[in-house]
Length: 187
Image (spheres, rainbow, N blue to C red):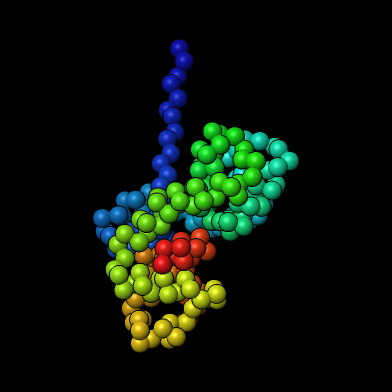
């Protein structure tokens, strides 16, 4: 008589690191029973590994695609997964010959499925601030250069929403260059 082995099942969900902070008592079971794993941006080598797995190939063209993906995403896991999925959809599951010609279509999907949602709950004044911040060539922004036009509270709220990253005392940046590109195109 064979013994039945119980199956292990895993549950995985992703969220910002402060996802449960506002609802701590309600979220206590999830916080207690799940192991938190903080996913950082992938290195170029990790991006190459991901690209190889996503496209299931060892083609010599893989290195060029991997480099292109890293330049676009800077190893950001969400953007890397999203762009790979869209490239696969555009090419019916095969490796794209050259991703540049597919980029406008992929970026349009990224705009629809990610950036529009990012901005769905942003008040007009904060949206105006984001568009202003997308303009300068500098990567980091000091809020005092935007006062009194915008209040410090706007920077805090946009940081809480994950649209700005506080890089240091009095220094902020948009959360990703692709978001900056989207804001510049939608002015």
